[in-house]
Length: 113
Length: 113
Image (cartoon, rainbow over all chains, first blue to last red; front, side, top):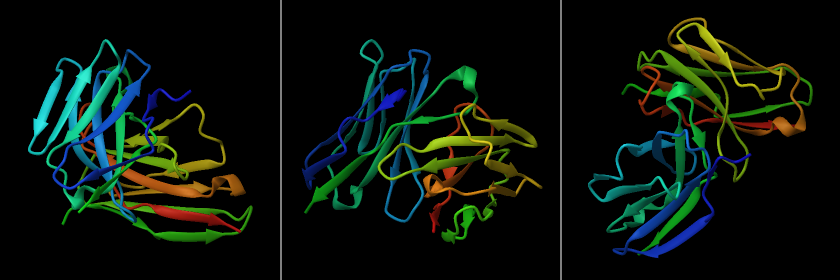
């Protein structure tokens, strides 16, 4: 049972444009969400997070939006840069589960010069 | 730099031959995690340690064991690897339970002959 889903395995955008990566979840008990970025041959690195009490969190070029009623979150990158090309993982956790994360399958973002 | 280090980066073992993967951290984090990631799938949590307190996931096979002899080191032992155990194994740490992002190592790619 995949509780966190990233339905787009890949996304290709032009440098300078906006990248929008989407993530859906099924468990309404999730109360904290994170995005990780992974380059080839490296481990995932933390990018940005959002608590369920918020609907938006921004950090530089990265903004995460949370729509609790739709059980949907998205990561916006603007402007996109070629160095943003990586696999992006969405992850979610429940307060009652300590720090256990449930990950999505990842979306490969390619930013073309 | 403080970090999470996994050794080896690539491991080849024979079907049924025990293998041990290693993780060390210089972050002095209380929590250490082991994930299994198969190609194009989400990382799946196998177990984690909160200090010396071992927490196994319900669906982690008995074939997988872990040891944490001290704060800095954590080992993943696969007692009798099968072909289905070929995967990337990721170690991660976090400071405490709760909304602290996990810091990942670069992983060990395990192949089974």
